[in-house]
Image (cartoon, rainbow, N blue to C red; front, side, top):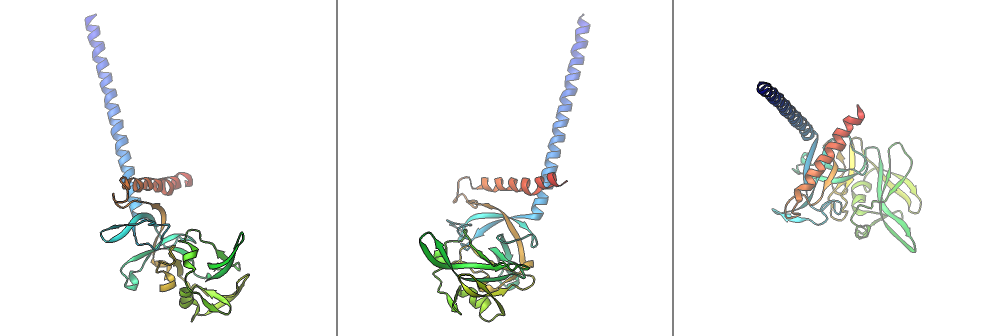
Length: 278
């Protein structure tokens, strides 16, 4: 009986030992697979996305609405961008490489027109309740279309401040002065009748070029000042905005937003794509 108990205990211990080894091996396999997938995903992410800290106020209030000064720069927000110059469309926030113009920098602006589009900025009549006033509006006729879009941009830093720019009067139409001097004054234009405005001059964006402006229209050096840019100079488009994300001076937990948006992009842009596409 004693011998049988010893044999039973021996085989029991042997079985439990093998089970423990199997559990350990499976844990190690799962851990290795996890780190391999994490490495592959992160490598793919680093090759296709960038984390960029925003300096300046040209995109207020969308970016840096209340910047703090860190090492001489007004910074607060950051963005994740997808590295692409092709996958961009109207309204995207994009980063443009300006080094080809000896500026040795890049700028972040909002894309408003592509090549072949006809564009203008003029004052239009706006009726809201009992109020009747005029304000600058960006107008666009997309390539291949005859429809005139009068774009209301609710993301800019107030139409009221922008309207402080003294307009240029041309054939009874009031144009935004900087746009007019850059694109309408000495360039070849087309004219279209806009109801409530008059015969408005439009500039046609040249092949391969894009037109963009900062959301802070009175505090942005953009295409109104420097002209259109080649689409090839686009570094990428913003896929996620991370507020208060640059320093403990912004927020005690400033790093949490960056990590949260990183994993959100990994899921939305990578995992979800492969899971639902294949």
